[in-house]
Length: 83
Image (cartoon, rainbow, N blue to C red; front, side, top):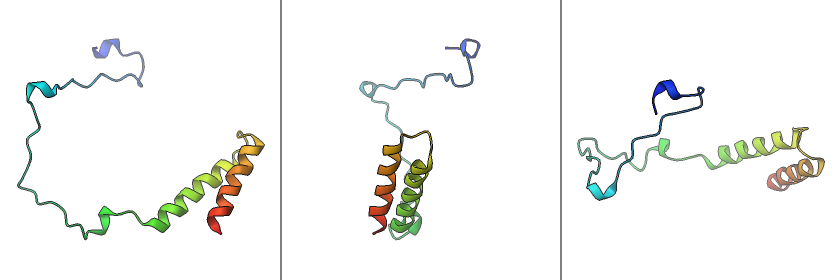
């Protein structure tokens, strides 16, 4: 596919295919040490993650395009998780 054939900005060119049978594996870079497992950047805060989830579910409950019973279900999820 060439760029002239792209219909709109959502069309993308396919990635080149790689075959495992050719034996072409990526080179490993051993010059960079592995990160320490004590690094806090490697972990997700459980409480903040739960609050973020609750906010997303509450947004679904407030969305008027959802059917009423679905909105009630979302509210019950938020309510039960906050208990």
